[in-house]
Image 1 (cartoon, rainbow over the protein chains, first blue to last red):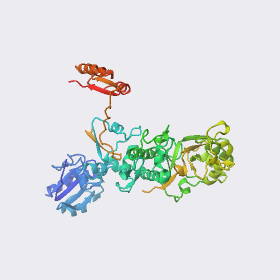
Image 2 (cartoon, chains in turn orange, yellow):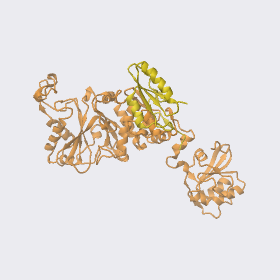
Image 3 (tube, each protein chain N blue to C red):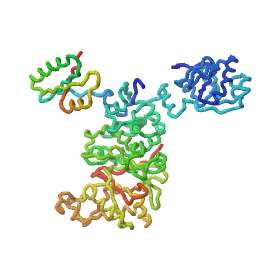
Image 4 (cartoon, rainbow over the protein chains, first blue to last red):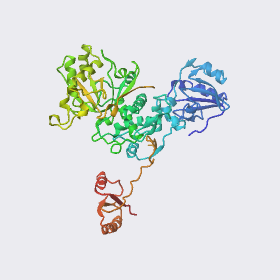
Length: 484
Length: 94
């Protein structure tokens, strides 16, 4: 491996796989013959160009990296250890002016653009930053010696949620950090339950393991910030015996740019962004916060959404205001909303053609969450499919109108909800009923969120049940604008 | 193939960077000890004597043996060890 560069003279960086480098082979020979102190570096073949006898093998790209070459051929003049001039590609006038050799390239075209340097091939920049010590990762290095499989090493150290993770190498970290302008050592917040500080770098390492692409990373960071807001109560969401985990709903142009799914199978598998953004959040809780099942995570049953639970809202519809906009984020901005949610409960209604009937179906299904006699405890998220939303829209109903009607239809006689009523021990205490004659499932202390998602066919919607300790007693949804 | 891969710790780094060893049992009373013969010569001599001493103390003993010393123990044997004993003594022989 090279360890030094010349203090003076000329450096010519070429690669055989470049028509312009092939073109200037005679010029390189002319320059050597002229007595110019020329050092030729070849990126892909130390036998190229044949016309020069002492080509420097730069297949490790040391010189190309140190000279910050972006184009080949590059001809660089070096004086007193520093670059004083450079020509990229072939341009006869420039090369003659740079070298002072007026006879070169007479038979060549006046100019020809060069090719991309191998040192700036996709993914190579981060490789070279690590190889030549220009990175500044602060996380503790962990050596995995061959033949141990790095994926298995991650399992062994408890870094996985049970599925294979992408091994968090420094190169992958640097690529992930390209997704944000935030400094790697910036502290996002303290992650429960251990309240360990989470830097952007730690978040990036977990995003790497989850399988995120760098363009997802700002969404991950916003989701982390959202669950750390006190009203979300991430510690409680983690340690409860309930089923819940953080669901992440993404609004705005970043959801589209990341290729998130808001359509067919939006709540299911198969989309990388949906799958890995939610997983990255869970891995941060696990690895930085120390929130592991059986330890602080005391969920009695859990649910598959605790691996990952993330989707985009299908915003583009008449009479529809996106969730984040309803929650105060300016339209056109990107945002995440986090909701402490359990699994998905289906609602089938293929007969309703007027909004009142459909709202009634939703209300009846919503009354069952948690327990049919537990009113005023659970939040819920109602995920309305395009086919169902169209029925509302055709009658001019927007999300607020739908919400108001659905909550209204959940009203039940208070006497039916009392503990012991109907021979069922569950239910409300007298103090919780007070002098009310009817009670709604959703009271001012809990919330019903409404979002739109799903494929273009199917008179089907869904409920994502909230935590039994919703609202001020536990967790409230939080919306955060995404910044890059 | 790389001789080694450097990973960066994604945790809060409050734990050891090496995988921690499990704590030894505070006592063998009421416990079962697996004696694992890795199938090398005279490993059984050592384990026979160990079995005698443990049995004298009332400690439960189970004997296991690898099919060959030249390969990792099969997954089924590992599972039997984990499920059937509180501790393992492995006779490496030589």
